[in-house]
Amino acid sequence: MVSAPEPPPEVRRGLAGVVADTTAVSEQDGPAARLTYRGYPVQDLARTCGYEEVAHLLLVGELPGTADLHAFRRRERALRPLPAGARAALDAMPRDAHPLDVLRTVRSAAGARGAGDPRAAPAAAEGAESDAALALVARTPVVVAACARRLAGREPLDPDPDRPLADDLLRMCRGTPAHPDEVRALEMSLILYAELGFNASTFTARTVVSTGADLTAAVVAALAALGGPLHGGANEEVWRTMRAIGDPAGADAWLRAEVDAGRRAIGFGHRVFRREDPRAAPMREALAALAARCGDDGARALAMHDALVASMARAKGIPPNVDLAAGPAYALLGMPTALFSALFAVGRTAGWCAHALEQRAHNRIVHPLAAYVGPPPREVPR
Ligand code: CMC
Image 1 (cartoon, rainbow, N blue to C red):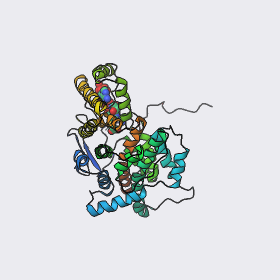
Image 2: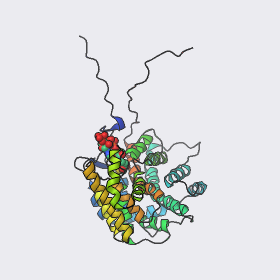
Image 3: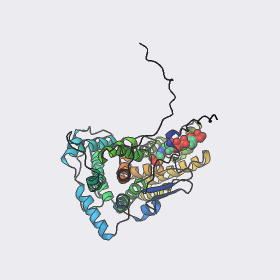
Image 4: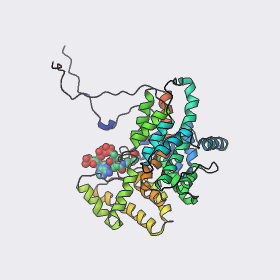
């Protein structure tokens, strides 16, 4: 009997709809517009928790009790000061370099292994890697704040071990302590950015770890993947776009022109959350809270956000993603636009590390297939 020919393999470009592995870190349910971190709705975490509690949830697996939180905070704060290697790498970077590039380079330089170092044995690596993960969470804000200072022509400030992470991040960026409402808005954004399943940067981190490479290599690669405007760079592009439009009254015409030209309006759409990005509403709340403190600038930023949302709903029915509110919120916090994607990285570092540790614990090297479309086999001409 002649068997039927094999059907051609189905190609899912961008791995859309492909289930690549299991994870216990977070669940993304697109149709239900639900994002949970280890079972807890992201909106509830953003509205009620501190960033350190959420980092503990992601890295350790549970929200901390009071004693655990104190111990976790103590460890995190003790790890903040940058080691000499990181400081030297920071000093070597041009002052006007993009903060995400600085962060990636400093992380890579500071994490360089000696050429003769044996890799840690997997059994010994677990404890060492969770310390390394917490060090990444603790030091990323210090490097990002140093970038803000250097962009402004000022010297970086040392971290203050008496302040929570978000509070200290704002203080180190601006040079003066921030108002609690500002800290809360920034903290909400960091929590909303902290984790999102197998998004491009996290999947990159998991792919790197799957080869047996270390946590530093995974986070450096994740930082590289984050930078594009379709991913972490979107919050910067959102604010540049809003500034270019200028007046909220021009939002509708701008958006219609984008859609009519077949371009993608930045700050809208999501691979998984087609109906609604569950992070968008709490991020708009944070934006509104900041706007209320910022007079005309605040009112204009919020009105611009809302006008774009209304216009896109009419034009294409595509909902906003978290970045549409995060961009103007960071601007109202006085952050330079070039810093926005690095602020995203501050939040996402806990998620990257949680996934890297999970991949390490249940590893199989990532190596999908490709459907070949090149020339058929042929002889090398001689
Ligand atoms: N503006 C206009 N149309 C859009 C947009 C948009 N922002 N996003 C999607 N569409 C359209 C797209 O053109 C397509 O229409 P059609 O079927 O007529 O060709 C349809 O919606 C489906 O889009 P898709 O190509 O399947 O989308 P994707 O899953 O490949 O891409 C995305 C997802 C986030 C890259 C995309 O929505 C986009 O480019 N958005 C703008 C960039 C942005 O804001 N990125 C931040 C995402 S949230 C942060 C993160 O998770 O990293």
